[in-house]
Image (cartoon, rainbow, N blue to C red; front, side, top):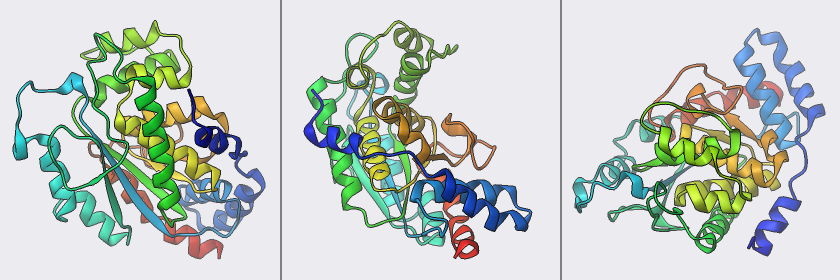
Length: 297
């Protein structure tokens, strides 16, 4: 059921460049700044150049999962609508940090329950994954292609991603069970157990447990990697999308960088938990990109 577009993108992803990573690392090694050295090496590996390029964008995928549905229409008072509105009007922490980092924000409505001011792209309506597949395979495939289209439209050298919406923590727990065989306790244990028992292809896994945000971000990550553009991850939902992307194309791992430990992706830049995963942590990491670029020019 994979589209020809997705097949082409996957086939276009080669390994990140270890030689360029080492070249950038050597340029940054004399600064006695391990964080910059680490980030610079990863950026250079993904961009296939020891001279790091610094144009940046932030993409936030918004989707409310059915497992988080409050059961009533909340309209403008819906938490997702409130958070999206704060980003759009510039009052959210993400917006403030993005302005400082000179990083435009693209808000993508991939399945918000209530109307929001965002680009409708890869929009799907999820079902409760605790009782049935969250998406159809067709919807998942189309939303993946939407993420690819988004990546192709961004004129950038690095993209930071975030995710926003209710119920994503349940989806993330299920996907981590299915793809990492990781056991989770607590409120998401039931979803995690469903993932642990699951055995399917990457597309089937995405449809069974994912949401529009997972699909769009995974497609974006794959397409970005095919163009040698690294992706900065922020929060568990973006980490879950990264797991899906890596299941489709293992080489994509060399193009994914965890901004902080909260993403669940290995080797974070910051070893602290930040925000709710809507992109704030990744935007903070963008502030270091200019320093890496200037020192490797």
